[in-house]
Each structure stands twice: as structure tokens, then as C-alpha cells.
Amino acid sequence: MLDADFFRRWMRTAAASVDREAERLTALDSAIGDADHGSNLRRGFTAVATALEKEAPDTPGGVLILAGRQLISTVGGASGPLYGTLLRRAGKALGDAAEVDEEELAAALRAGVEGVMALGGAAPGDKTMIDALMPAVDALGTGFGAARAAAEEGAAATVPLRARKGRASYLGERSVGHQDPGATSSALLIAALAETAEADGE
Amino acid sequence: MRMLINVPETVVADALRGLAAAHPELTVDVEQRVIVRRDAPVPGQVALVSGGGSGHEPLHGGFVGPGMLSAACPGEIFTSPVPDQMARAAAAVDSGAGVLFIVKNYTGDVLNFDMAAELAEDEGIQVAKVLVNDDVAVTDSLYTAGRRGTGATLFVEKIAGAAAAEGQPLERVEAVGRRVNDNSRSFGVALSACTTPAKGSPTFDLPDGELELGIGIHGEPGRERRPMMTSGEIADFAVDVILEDLPPRAPVLVLVNGMGATPLLELYGFNAEVQRVLRERGVAVARTLVGNYVTSLDMAGASVTLCQVDEELLRLWDAPVKTPALRWGM
Image (cartoon, rainbow over all chains, first blue to last red; front, side):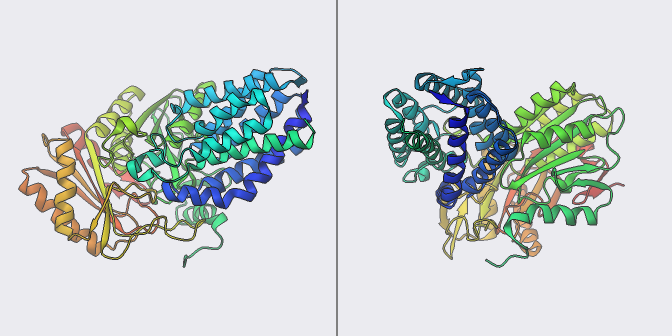
């Protein structure tokens, strides 16, 4: 079972990972976007980590809702509302439970991904974060490692796609051949989840 | 990179402190990043709030003042502001007559302003929205995030601002804003990429002797690259693309806008060519504005925006305005 502490550690791990990879995310974004994805997400996840130190929600849902709200209030751009919605929706789906199992987490993340799709209007194959998140949620039933692998494969699979959403969509065919920065950061978030679970011996 | 800055992290805050020092008629909250005209809320008047990424100066903070915006929310460089900023701005300027959000069509701006509208409505503030999407360079809107908002933002903010200053109700101000957007089209070219302070190197590589046609205002490349053209050839191309999309029916407002690093000497020369093409195509010009208004940091290049106007829109365009970057009649 996964408790609030597990979710806090997941968010802290994600913050560290985004911090480490911020320059790579920005470099990916400069190819087909506007070169700020890494610095924006770093600002947001740093705020999440700080907020979780000040305030310690005692349920998994509470941790995700707080994290989502921080992202919406600090990131800006499209990724603030989208990542904020992902975590808030997932947190709401978990409700007040003090502990959740992996199946419940998978269902909650699926609700979060559906929230992102509704908000951004993106579908799989549009070269967005959905292309990493959707396969990860599908694979979560078979374990955290499988989810990480699926997310990474999903992110890599955005390379040959033509962007249909977000700023990269303005490039049309010229967006082909570049990995989507949003799918890449989504894979980092799922990898942080797997890393947290592995540290637990889950 | 050679920039007149301290460190990339404080570029926006430093600029806001400088804006505040130069314009005591504005209230600038550097911490919360909200720029408000000092006499707001103006009783009985609809308030206009806009915002977007920084790096497009004077848009939007330079357009705050009587006859135009009530407040502006600058985000990080090229990144939309967050909902909290916009909701705070709306609360600061609402007189009870409602608030009009003017939003450029970018995914981030749209999502954050939508969330802000929900927050403001929770506070009992009536909110309406005009989406600006004038960029004809985006052709297949079905398979993109839709046309971008660029130069027409200035026309919408000025003309809707004049309607609000006349005391028109929210739904009328909103309708005027939409009419301006519906009658406006833009096309931009880049002669160089821009450099964001955080990245420190040009956002794309543009070899000497080439130009990008159909660029946006975020340092993103355009829809095609060609060997360098003359000012006259660019004017022919840009005006024709615009008129093809919006056939001429009425006199136009013309905005010849610099992207940040093109001198006025070149912009005026380019304007002469734009006026020539319009004359050749039989399009009457009502008013012309030339300068750096909706920029893209240090990008060299220019955009052309045409807005077809009727008598009412022209009267509102001519109405007095007093902001840091645009002022006449008062």
C-alpha cells in the first residue's frame, strides 16, 4: 500500500529529476517550441517541493492536489495548467483514503490523463505529453518498471510525429524528427514514480 | 550573448521596476507581476485585462492607461502568466461593470486565462473574453493549435479600450473586440532569430542571406525559408497573403510592426512599400502606425497587420489614449 509519505517522496524525486534534466528539456523545446520547458517546470516543481515541506497533507490525494495547485500557480504556459490538472485530477480521484494500492493509483492517474486530454484537446499521436502518459498508465497494471519503460518508449516514439497541438504545431512538417519536450518531462515524472517505488522495494 | 541585464532570472522583475520608475501613473506590483492604471477601478467602466509572456514589449504593460488596458499581467519570457496573476488583476480593476480578458491564441494563454476566469467569477466578477487569432501564416488551423494572436492584439486593445472608456456595457465592448479581431489579419517575417536570456543563444539558426516567412512572436521558426528578398518583395508577399485571406471590402488600419531589432529607418522604408502595394491593390488606408509594438526580443524583422474598419471602429481608434507606448488626443 502507498501512503502520503510515498507520494511526497515521489514529488521530491520528480523535483530533483526535473532540476537535473531542465537543460535537456529546454534544449528539446528550443528545437520545436520556445526554449523554456525546462526552466518553467523547474520553477514549478521547486515550488511543489517547498510547499510540501511547509504543509504536509496526510493523504495521497492531498499531496497530489497540493502539488497540482502549486504547478498551476507557478509554471505558466501550457504545461502549468496541464501538469496541474494531471495531478489535481488524480488527487481528487484518490479521495480521502489514507493509503491506496497500485490499482487505485493507476485508475487515478488515468483520470488525470483524461483531464489533461479534455483540457488540452490532445489525443494520442499528436506529439504531446499524452504520448508518454497514456502508455504509462496502461502499463501500470503490470508494475512500476513497466510503466517507466512504456513512458520512455512513448516519448521516444514522438520523434517521427508531426505536432498537432501546442506551439510546435505551427512548424507543421518541420516538427518531425524532434522528440516532444512535454512527452519527455512526462516520462521523467513516471520514472520518478518508479524510482520511488524501487527505493521502497515495492 | 551580450545583453544589458543582470542575470536571466531577474530580467522580468528588473524591467518591471524600471517601468514603474518611468511611469508613476501606473501601479506596478513587481512581486505579483501585475501592472494596473493608478486610477483603477474607474466607476461605471468595463475593465480590460490582458497579458502574456514577457519579451513582446511594449505589449502588454506599455498599453495600460486611459483609453486602453486597465491592467496587464506579464509572464516569464514567452511564457503565459499564471491564473492567480490574472484573477488578482481582475479584482484590482473591476468597478462592478465587468472585466474583458483579451487573450492571444496560444495554448498556455488560453488555458491560464480560462482558469483565471473561473477564479474571478467565483469572486463575483463578471468576465468576458476576446480571443485574438490574426496570423495568416498558420494555414491549416485544423491540425494546429489554431491561428496565433500577433499584431491585431494592439488593435483589439485600443479599440475595445475606447469602447470601454465611452461607458459601453461589457457585452458591447466584447462584441467590438471580436469585430476588430474578425477584421484583422497579420503576417510576419524574420531576418534573424531572437535570443532568450535563459537560453543565451539564438532560438533557431538563420544563415546569412536567408529569411523566414510566416514567423510567430516567440522565436519559433516560420512556415518557410527563402533567399533574402527586398523590402518591396516582402511587402508584396505579406500584403497579398493577407488580402487573399481577407479580401478588401473597407478601408484599413495599417500596423507596420518591428520585431525588436529592426531600426525605424528600415520600418519606414518597409511601410512605404506596404502602402504602395495597398495602393496597387486598390485598398484605401485609413490610418497607419509604424514602430516596435509587438516584439520578439531582439529578433530582426517586421510584421504587417491590416484591420478593415467601419466608421465606428475608426472613431474608436481615433479616440484619446494615454499609455506608455501609445498616446494621442490627450
